[in-house]
Every structure is written in C-alpha cells, then in structure tokens.
Image (cartoon, rainbow, N blue to C red):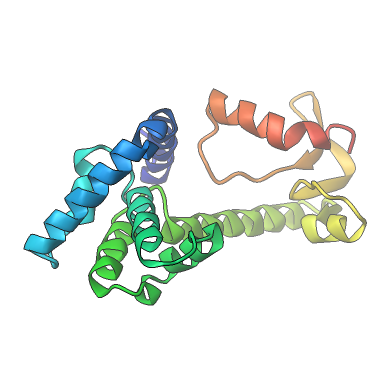
Length: 206
C-alpha cells in the first residue's frame, strides 16, 4: 500500500492536469461575467455563505483560481486602471487587504479550502521541498560524499542549477551519478518529461 503523502501527490498532479485542460473555458468573457453575476447574486442573498467556494465546486474549478477570476473582475469594476498581476497576487496572499469585506471573506474561504492551488498551498509545497533538500544533504554528508549545493553553484555563476553536484561522481546500479535534483512529488511520465525539458537537459554536461 502507498503512503498518504504519495496518494495526495498523485491526486494533486492529476487534478492540475484536469485544471490545465479546462482552464480556457473558465476564462471566456461570457464565463467570467456569468460567474461574477452569480457571485453578486449569491452574496446579495447571504454574504456569509461560502458563495465562491460552492460556485467553484459546482463548475469543477480550483477555488483559489475562481477567487482570482472574481477578484480581478471586481477590481476592474472598482478601479480606474486594470489591476496588475502583482497586485492580484498580493491580495490573494493577504485577503484582508481587499477593499470589500464580503469579497475578502469569500476569497479567504477559497484559499484555505483549496488543496492544490493558491498561496497557502505554494507555501506548503515550498516547505516540503526545502525539508526534502535538507534530508538529502544529511544523507550525502552521512555517506561522506563531497558536493556543491545550489547556493554554491549560483555563486560560481551558474544560472540553472541542480540541488547538488557531486564533486566526485558515484556509480549506482551501473549508472554514473554526477548530480542530484530533489523533487518532493510523484514522478509520473508526464512530470518527468516536463522536468527534462525545463531543467534536466541543462544539467547534462555538469
């Protein structure tokens, strides 16, 4: 049997694939206006009800991403200039800064109830990734392997760096290992392909 962490990682990856496939249909002007009107109608009847969260669940879209759509549409209506991406991100990280109290509460409900997207999930992923890097570092030290870490490599001028480069390569099951990249996620074929394209090929000659 698999651990809960492994199953959650698999679920998260499959859910993100689903969201990417259906992303476009939620961002048509018709969809945005429909969602925004339903939000206004819902909070008009009961501002304390989880209107945005229920709407996201009904249309099968990530709550944090639904919150972003509605927040951006709200700001377009109430600000003279269109909101920048950095402003939107800042308000999602701290909903108490949203100028409308009801919307702030709705956005907060979406963020804390989203298991795959949003600033809270990003913080958790970052913490888990950092924890795994520390565990890997401890293992390398335990085995008395000489290595350079990401910070040391950046100081040498590398832009794209693996987590660790072994200063003396080692053999594992007949394969020569030059570097190690820690990924605290389930490694399916799709994610391996993406990581190869985005990161791993640039490490090839290191």
